[in-house]
Amino acid sequence: MSENSKLQETIKQQAMGICEVLYNKKAVDIVAIHVADKTIVADWFVICSGRAVQQVKALADELDEKAESLKLTLRRSEGCSEGKWIVLDYGDILVHLFYPEERRYYNMERLWDEDDSAIRYSAIRDEEEREKRAAEKS
Figure: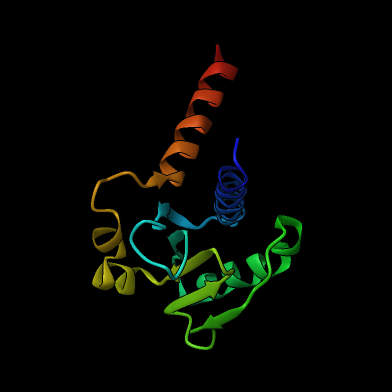
């Protein structure tokens, strides 16, 4: 495996770690999109929603607390005071935390996931949880 491949895998694992933190904090509809071939801004976008402005802010706070354990350094953040669309810049990964109305309006998945290759993290994890509960019942 080349150095670049190792680096790309590390970045992907960090993006999945972000998804896991958000999932555990009850974020809604978490999606990770590989965008390295579409922009120089980042390699991955992680997009999710909170059910209320307070939850969107809490998601940002949770990522701030857990960033070091994921070996991530926050370079910049925007929108934290309003809580309608918060962007957290971790260099190779940009996290977009939305209030539902803003997410529908900006529809970033449509812009960045043209080939429908996004990792639909919430859907995957929800299915795993359903399977686990079904297995426990049998």
